[in-house]
Image 1 (spheres, rainbow, N blue to C red):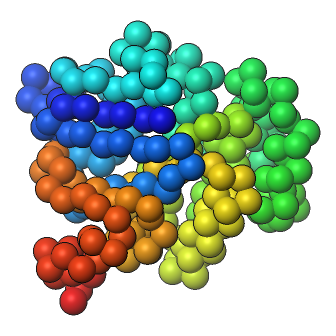
Image 2 (image 1 turned 90 degrees about the vertical axis):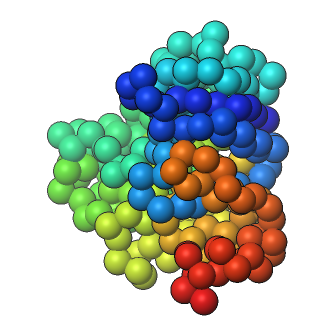
Image 3 (image 1 turned 135 degrees about the vertical axis):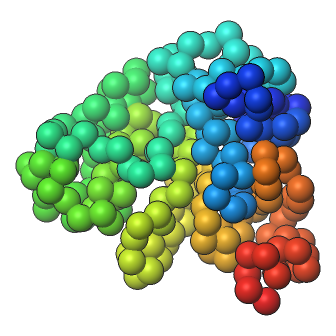
Length: 235
């Protein structure tokens, strides 16, 4: 579904990402882990189009994304839930969800999608007329995920969904992602610093350090690797 090949990208003439290659097959849950500053968010921004690649190839369902403008990429089925949630604080919960449903597929499937979103996140249903800026951090993260789901994505990219959340709330978010994936078969690409959880649920994982992929494999392979165990799992 998504193929990133030999990607170099960054914000100046000096690349943040160096020769990065990542592959995501339809229906997979793929995690990308690594320390702060490794380039994980830059990779997501390059896929969604807010950062231009210096070289390399990014393709989605066989389409070269370099030929697709950033505003058109969600219409292909790519939803990016950004780091820090970035909900629209002056809009209500419902208005935020409606903003997510701007794609053709999102509009077509709005009634089904909103029912599912409220089923997965009942708190959003209870607060549908509340301003997003007044929600708790966990509720805002639920809203950011719901907004992404409202577009009827084929690929849901989640950047650090546990950031700033209490452990119990972060556990709830992870459980919901697994439930959503199990019930819908949605393809998920996750960037996350909670490495144990990110790798536990992943079909495949990548370790990104200083802008380079230094290790990849299924969760069993990565959990057994001494570098991962020592650097990220505290073992």
